[in-house]
Image (cartoon, helix red, strand yellow):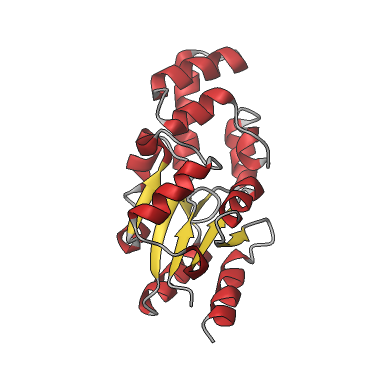
Length: 199
């Protein structure tokens, strides 16, 4: 039986229009839309070891921007995040069915605080966020943390993420996984696993 679904945030619960991303920000955040490692300073931002001002300075150095322009680009990146309607609908369905929903995300303190304004966050039963734990996915310890903190049984749990490395790490624990991709069928694949396991 599937009793729990764990959601990544960026690219799963909240998305960006990547056409607008390019139009608004050029190549500055091209790494966001690619299935590749983030720059070390951005990973450390998510881990909570760098502040927004430190990351802004590094971004300015990397892209030959003024500090004001770099900070403006970080703010615009944040503002481009909007709920993905299909995932929002899925979460509401799951809650109505009595399935618990959780967050497991690589996210900085500043970004996470801003995203909590979206109504979908009222539906989650718990969250493990990288900046709070000083751990980023796919470090195995962050999966151990969410499983132990909320008493989740791996075989009763689905993890949805848009990075294959992150879902692969979850599979090592025996968690069911769905890797969201550009096909937009992630929510339906979550439903398929639930139908299969809960019949």
